[in-house]
Length: 639
Ligand code: AMP
Image (tube, rainbow, N blue to C red; front, side, top):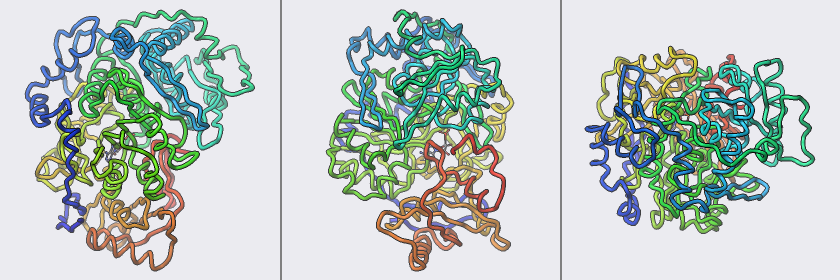
């Protein structure tokens, strides 16, 4: 159980320890491809070139590389001189290998509609869409903005861009007019693919109307391709608008993949980054393909007969890597669903797991906390025994949420294993994690994954001793790390310049004596109470470990004596109500769990927390509201 630990005056203190280890079921570990994790990791560091060349060798290339890796700090290249096209490996390679009639995607809609598409059919759809884009004049290197809901056509449009060497930039369908416009302008996209509508929580999101507003006056936008999903169909009013299927159905289903240099850009994905100003993260064909494929087959360890269920959206990096590209590279069947994870009822995800016998799952901690809020009986009426590996990323996975997932979703390890993994838009795939061959330590993400040298350092770049917090940096580029910030190489260089000889992630972390990392939050959010620097995750996890609390967010407020004091915002679990007694109880609970230093000065009981659409709590917004400040570019985060 949680115990106190001494805190220091300067470093970020880790207050929460659970000391518990949960081993993966023997049935899982014994069959894992990455059986000897330590040996695999060692090989990836001692001979990085040989290691990644071997992974790349499992895929097909038009031309092999002359050199595996070249580093001219801060820029680098992987598979230099090689030529490939990621869609060839996603589609043609699988069709030729006998997967033509295998289901590539199972799509579910909020209204219960379900669709399936095979690898062969997906290849046809992608080729037709690619030819359609070509007919509109889209060429290699052109940027195409995709403002599309989570649909098979959305994934196909991404693949179609990649097929012809165009650079897609997906903007999460639901972002505001202004957020969309700024991305269209930044990418200078002449063609946009959208839909009339997306569906979320039973409501229609009028995407086309948002696009109309966003491109108003932007003369350089030549065409808008509209997937019309509603009846009666929306009218296409201007000459530059084209119906998606009218365009696609008249094309040939033959489209040879454009031959791409390994380092040619595949996509731009805008992330809010640390400052709030959107940052166009650029990933490339070759390295991204190899890295995401490696983790799909080693970390998630997917097999031919798996159904991989990813609850992210193609608007986020997790959706790019682990709905669209990597599962296809690995040749598995992927299940995804448009809409809210708790709509029309909070157990819909478990209904789908049971129906499709989903075996490997990728979701976010916010979803786990939502399920917990409704209690175990919500889940236990479904048969989840197919679920071999349950993974989360995106935010700290509180130990309480980990334990719940282990107990309720994984049957205490009887059939499944729950694991955390850490990454960012910039890293394209996971960097820290608990693969299904290592014991999980609740509150800790896991170890650096093969190819990744992660360290916790002070601002000068000096390594912190074990169990002392500091900045999380990555030392050596791996193939799926981003190459630049679109149109802003200086911003890219800054990420590699904040701490000498390292990529600074913007997160704060702690590494224990065995090399397990805990990510305690964004560096900008760190609390500073009476000289103690405390990560937000510790206090939030302590609150969530009380049976009355479903979710918590904490911020620091200026305090004349302590520097900062802590304010907590708490959502209660179903069946609990706010009261002065509960306030005292929660404060006592935090005191007993973390020590007096972590106790919030104030606890506000709220109905909801402001979150990004990808489920991350916006502490910056909470803090600005609390202090009556301007929030900045919040339109890029949530509305
Ligand atoms: P994004 O680039 O939008 O995917 O967000 C990446 C950020 O999410 C990271 O820098 C972390 O702050 C947070 N994050 C992602 N995964 C984890 C995790 N497993 N534990 C803690 N924080 C995480």
